[in-house]
Length: 68
Image 1 (cartoon, rainbow, N blue to C red):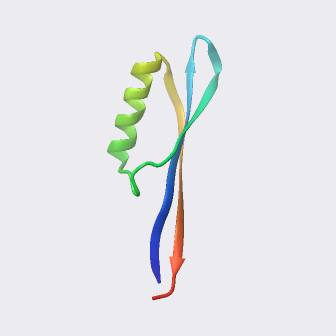
Image 2 (tube, rainbow, N blue to C red):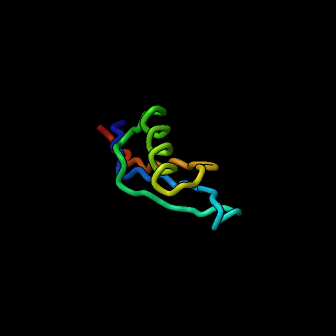
């Protein structure tokens, strides 16, 4: 069976002074299989840009399956 990544998205919930319960942002069209290091770096950069702290992140990957 052939697996092809169709889409990858990352939903990040961050907390800051204006959003104490959290603000959710979704980023679409990520690389097919991001490494833990890439996700961690992205969260660090996002925190620096927004002045908040990333509370959690959810990685969603849609994969198509085809018979050979």
